[in-house]
Image 1 (cartoon, helix red, strand yellow):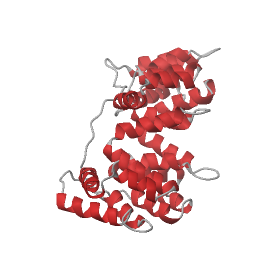
Image 2 (cartoon, rainbow, N blue to C red; image 1 turned 60 degrees about the vertical axis):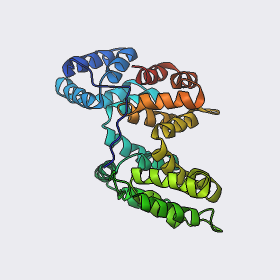
Image 3 (cartoon, one colour; image 1 turned 135 degrees about the horizontal axis):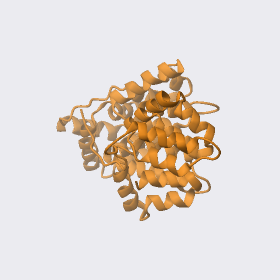
Image 4 (cartoon, rainbow, N blue to C red; image 1 turned 90 degrees about the horizontal axis):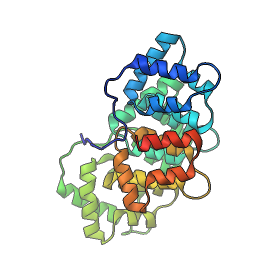
Length: 319
């Protein structure tokens, strides 16, 4: 199995005391007014597992649900962010996917991002959590709201059957690269089935070798071929797979730039990425962002947000 080691911005607090943290939160929300600074201070200086202990201690000490109190006292994006950091990681991702499939149309970016950036075990855990919490089958929901080759792509990703060995078969990489070339720019009308089978089933280390072989054969990158031969959600999904495998940090940096550029901010995507990557590789993503856009991620976030929401986001980025 391929294992990725990165640098998060949030780590477990030393000398952790759940009772003291719970008491600080209760004091911050008790009586008239709310001490938002104290809430931020507690939530972003503890790891997710520590926050779960704080929630349990809060319940045992005061007989109250911490998330319900947060929702009563706060509002808007700041409330959403605080609820997100208090939610167990797998549950949070299941909630994100549920939000993505609600209403008219699906938030394809959210679905693609989550399915392309998690390993088989994590996807299975998300599916199980989704089934338990929403009493629905995630795969069925995704299939019912998609069609054509995009549906086939999603099914391949959500089935969580990618090979996760680290050994590389270089002969297979050459064969797969030739098949991708023949099924893409080498023919009239790209063969989506070939791209799906290879990109959704081969291990990440195997695909790295395949991408290198493809460039030798085709004289251009596989990403360039996908951009020229596919369109819409299929193109976006195939590119997401390629970018995640080539450089996951740059993939997330680009996702964050898309959240922040133009008029308005995609706050749901911004919260999703910063919260879900905060203990995994957010420090690495910040470096990739600076390298790609010559701008500090925290500066861009500060320019696009305000109030306690901004303060909390910046504390996640720069604890």
